[in-house]
Length: 108
Image (cartoon, rainbow, N blue to C red):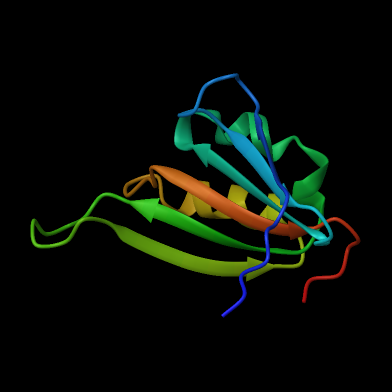
């Protein structure tokens, strides 16, 4: 089996591994964005969140037998949808978000 190498670019937005970051693979029209809840307001101001995308919200587990809970969603307007999720989940806030957007406004 032949494995091809990929050129991955990761940008640490605050210069720390635990803070918000973006990632892109050369030749792929998508972008991944990660943020802990503390920085979600800041990253939502980024232009990537004006595009369609898929997102994953990570929550603390409700039962000790699980490591985490996740919610997966998609939207044509990530910023609007994530702001709605933040408002809806005030009593059950998520810990972090990962979003996948397209750099050419097409999500496939």
